[in-house]
Image (cartoon, rainbow, N blue to C red; front, side, top):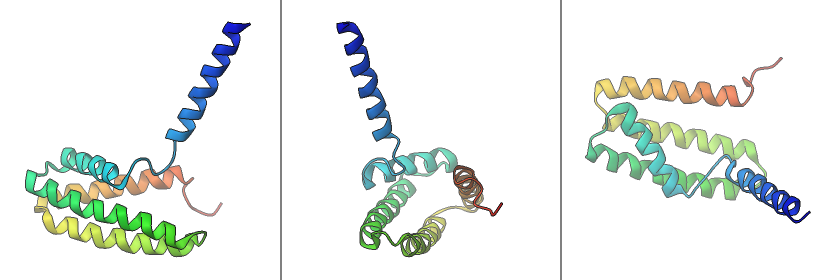
Length: 127
């Protein structure tokens, strides 16, 4: 009986931990900026200078996004519009740092992310 209670407790802990880790926006703005910079470095072969500048742009974006979500509260539409505008501006800043070949790879990366998001959101179309 004791073993059964321990096993149940462990399973409950694992489920709770997994649920907490499954949030859409994991980590601090710094952690997310580092993760995305690492992904872009792999995809685009960024130089050290480019990595530093891209990470600064992404950190600023993540910080502003967190603030915008907080200010918008329950107004998801306003929050989404603000974030979409911010993302477009930051994508242009990042493109400004890239070579022509990197710009092509970055466009493909953004297309991949967009497709993945649409897939997660169920296509976003009307059925």
